[in-house]
Every structure is written in C-alpha cells, then in structure tokens.
Image 1 (cartoon, rainbow, N blue to C red):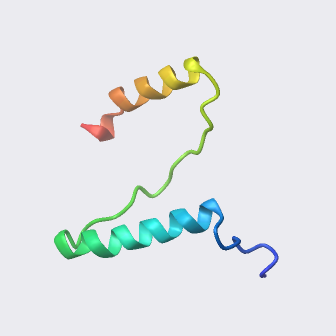
Image 2 (tube, rainbow, N blue to C red):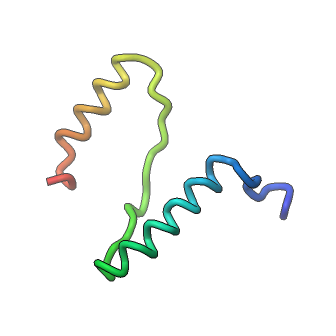
Length: 64
C-alpha cells in the first residue's frame, strides 16, 4: 500500500493537510461547514482556458 500512498511533501498531501486544518478551524465557527464533494482539476494552458473557467465561475448557479 505504501507504494501507492501519497508521498510526504507531495501536492496531494499538502492539500489534504490544508483542508484538514481549515475544516477544524471553520467548524468551530460553523459546525455545518463542508467542502465541495467533487471537483475537476484542470491545468490552465492558455488564455482561452482561463476565460472559459472565469465564465464558468461567474455563471455557476451554485455560486449565487
């Protein structure tokens, strides 16, 4: 199992640690806090990608 586990210092370990710390802190203020259940990773490769993502963020109905 250790061969497929995230390595110390890897991005996934850093993100997991960050989310854990934020969750513990924020739940003191808002016990119902939760992260978005799913997300889509995408490396922004050019300005077209960036503009498409910006438009999605602006028009995302969940952001209202």
